[in-house]
Image (cartoon, rainbow, N blue to C red):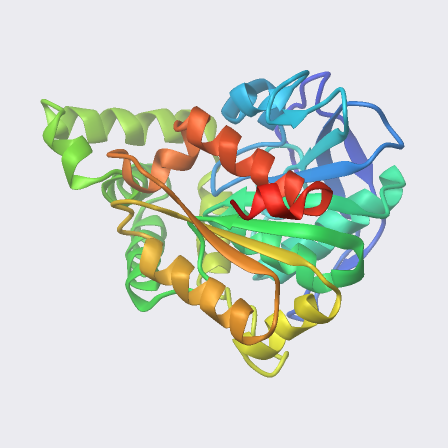
Length: 328
């Protein structure tokens, strides 16, 4: 199994055999990660989305992570691990034809395997957007007593039928043609990541979509994309836990706070789905609340609306330190 090269800031842990939910044992789990901030301090786990990497602090969430920023690396360490099944240093399907199907729960268990090796026993916050939000929920549900707050952004408790349908089409495109299929899958996905308002501000939509498809083909692996897209369709926090409310009861019993963040104009995992997640958590007795990002960027607002995200993250971290301020 070949892997893309790692940057010096993204070392990899070799963690031994790993058994998936499907009952397949991978001979060795390798997890690429980045850690910023003082080791041994309290920790935040950031989980990337579909085609992201472990380089949250240096790349896709750079404005939020660092000294004095929302995730203040003077105060606590921030960890981001490349997801199981991806192609940026963590074990995945690149170069093999027999990689097993995986789920967000498998990804969460791989994250905990890495955290264990790093000596991190407790998380002040686990946060992620889209697929990252699904995995963040599973991280908290795997070890509720080890998490203070979980923040899924633009992510549901259970995959919706429309999103599953879009994933199905993308998987069919990938099955027809590896390279061109990846480009077309990305083009389809981009129409769900942006809002109607955002698209109406652009000219040359065909060339814009072609450009997005080409960019992804040049930096990502088609098999990894298919593996991760299929994993999203398996997302259901209530599976084998007695349903969604019962799952959130596990968090309530461990006093885990739940902050669901919706995005205005998101057609992929919009406010209605995030509200449903928060309502289920409240029904379970969890300390749960809803926040919304106002934006014309659609689903991808969690990658661009830095000021609003800063406020939301700071409030989530303050929930334990100053509950009155956090609820204001």
